[in-house]
Length: 194
Image (cartoon, rainbow, N blue to C red; front, side, top):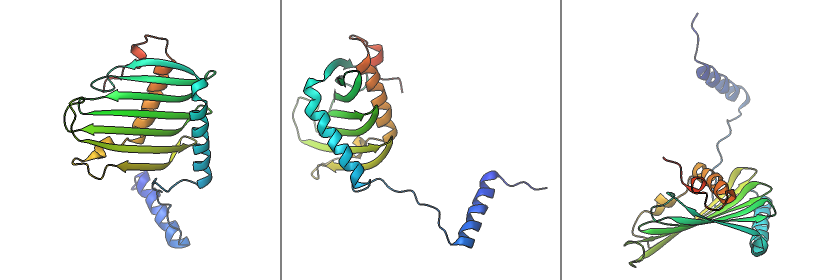
């Protein structure tokens, strides 16, 4: 008796369902600058505004970042009581500098804002500056909207600065552990070997 691979059987079943019912398999929905429900986006923006307004009264932690970028960086954690509300990182490379801000509500990541400035010459020596900016909205742990703006005059491909969602989530996890660590906790604030 000939056995079919399970994926071949599944494909054959899906084709049969489409032929009989006229149904089409659901297409993966792209996440873009206009995706996500307006109500969810409004809720995230309201939470972001509340965090920004209340941040001066939050408990704040500060740590140096090691090996996340060539020239180092610093991380601030903002807490309402014991609840992490915001992470703010500033990092430096030889020809770039960047800021990353992560916002949390109810223990979940809801919004990420990344800004990268690139330079023609090493940092501090001047030169033309290009900027790319990313806004990522999350609802229940799922990316629902992604907005990217880039300097239209850039003479290089700035897509290298486009953050991958898996990397954003992992960095948020690593930065949260660093922010929660006691002062001088170099191990918790060092990037894992890649």
